[in-house]
Each structure stands twice: as C-alpha cells, then as structure tokens.
Length: 369
Ligand code: GDP
Image 1 (tube, rainbow, N blue to C red):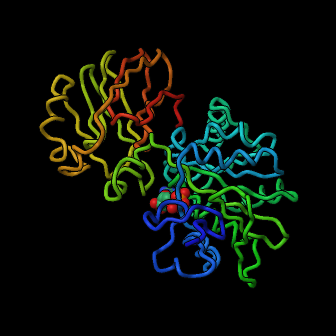
Image 2: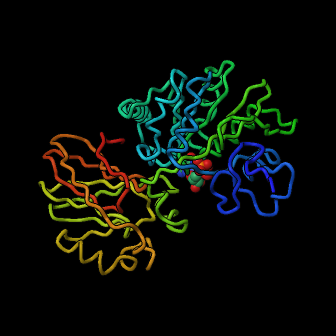
C-alpha cells in the first residue's frame, strides 16, 4: 500500500509517535488527503507556528542549502544560555548571507543592566565563537521588547530575500515566527503551506504578501543543555521565569555550593572571595564543605538536594568534574549551559570545579554582567 510517507507541506517523514519531532501527525489525521503534518496544519489553519525539533547533524544538513540562496538569516539565541544555544557552525552554511542575531529573553537580566555593554559583549562573544553578525538585536518575546527594532532591521536588510529563522529548541523561536507572520503576511488571505518538491525536509515556507517566504526551520536539539536533560516538571525550576536575582556567596577555599541535585560548584583553592550565582530563583542553593560534598550528594540527592525529586535525581547521567583556573584580576563567568553562571570576581585568582551530569557544556567566559 503506497501511502506517501512524507508530509505534503514540508516534506518531513511522517510519524505518529512524537509530537515534538518533525513530521508528527495524529493517527486520525493519516486518512486525510493530502497528508500534512501537525506543524504545517497549524500554520495553514491557525497561522500559528509550533515547536518541533531536530538533531544537530540533520539540522546542519538541512541548512547546507542556504549558502547558495539569497537569504536573510535570523538566528535566535537564548541570552540565559548563550553558548549553549548559539549555532556555532552556522557561518559555514550561510556563506555571505547576512545574519541577524536576535538575543532573546533579555527580560531575565536585572533591570540595572548596562545594555550597551551587553550588546558589545554579545558581538565579541559571537565573533569568538565564529559567527559574523550583520546586526544584533536584544529582545524579549515575553515582554514584547525589541521586536519593532527586529522587524525594522528585517525590512532594511531583506530586499527581495527569503527570511530563514533558525535556532535551538526553547529559545522562543515560535513566538518570533508568529510575530513575523502577523507583520508580513496578509491575514485577510488564508495562509497556504505550499508544496516544494525537493526542498529541504522539515522546513516550512510561509508565503508573504510580496511573493517571498519566511522559512521556519525545526529547533535544533543540543544535548549539552539542561533544558534537554531534565523532565518537564524540573524545567520550570531550571529555566528562570523572573529576572535573575544574583546571589553572592563569600566562600573560603574548600567550600561547595549545590544547585539542587543538578550540579555543584567547588571553590578548590584561593583566598576568601565572592562568587555570584546567576541561576533560577526556584533552584535551591545549598552550601557545604567540599570534603562532605560527595557523601552529602550520595545520601541526599532527591531529598535535601532537589530538584530533581526522589528517583528522578538518580536517573540523571553520572556527574563529571570540570576544573578551571580563574586568572588573577579577571572578571569571569563559570558558565553551565541551561543552568546559568557563577561570576568570579577574582583579585587573587582561584581554582574552581564544577560537577554536572556528563555531557552538559561547561566553560569559562568573560563575564556577561
Ligand atoms: P521555541 O522552542 O524556540 O519555539 O520556544 P518557545 O517560544 O516555545 O519558548 C520556549 C520557552 O521559553 C517557553 O517556556 C517560553 O515561555 C520561554 N520564553 C520564550 N521567550 C521568552 C522571553 O523573552 N523571556 C523569557 N523569560 N522566557 C521566554
């Protein structure tokens, strides 16, 4: 029986198992003709983008066509998880096409943030990570900030190009797409998701009123982020929903901070100094002695140390230790992808170590704020 296995909208392989992945279609909708995946269905009928995800390799394959096209690329990243959500391989694929870097979730930073300094930081950091940006827009999908500037920039740079929107999962891409749809497409007309034989799989081309397209790509799954590791329930504790309230700890060497049962920060060596945690307010920080840390974790994860609660704590991958030497006189963040960062204001230098589930990205960077 020759049922077409692909969505007639975006071309993704159809599947009925996982609503979060490309090509998902509910069992019941398989009998519709032509068969269309849920994501295309929603865009077509409700003008509403939804989140589907794709692995890194598949994603880069999908992107590989953009370089030959005349495109404007909007790369949306999560400011709270900057290094975890930046697509560092992007430059290779986009070729000479301009990239607008939309830095979302700016509402999470304290109100007193120096935004010019932040913009410079982003530009510098993106460059270090290999991405040239035509423009950097600080925005908040949640507070509806920065979007007017983003749309102005898109209009200025778009010319007659199609607009590709790329990003990791959970960065706020659907919100952005929906905003682009409402600004650029003619809502009097029904949106059509057309079929483009041979176009890259999993992308949805949304026609605009000028004959060009917004191309929504699936969100990339980066396995090194906490948001991909913890379950839904714990995601609320890990991803901050309120502006960060930095919490400073004056530590002596040989002291440790636990972030629930999700991770741990050791002050291994150096003079008494201050460490400022920028993590979600709903994550409990527990201070203890380094020499007690291993046994505390073994006995109390999922109990005194939560989240995760109970059994779920034991299901996380085994912890891996990352040690860093923070140079004298530097202003550095010890960054943990998806969990936040610890700012080290080090006059005298320090040796610190981070313990997190194996695979989580940890690095030291110049401090963000
Ligand atoms: P997508 O997976 O990239 O499409 O992202 P979503 O639009 O589904 O958003 C992912 C998560 O981030 C949701 O929990 C949103 O509430 C949250 N989120 C999106 N935009 C913002 C923002 O500007 N600020 C904050 N604080 N959270 C946001």
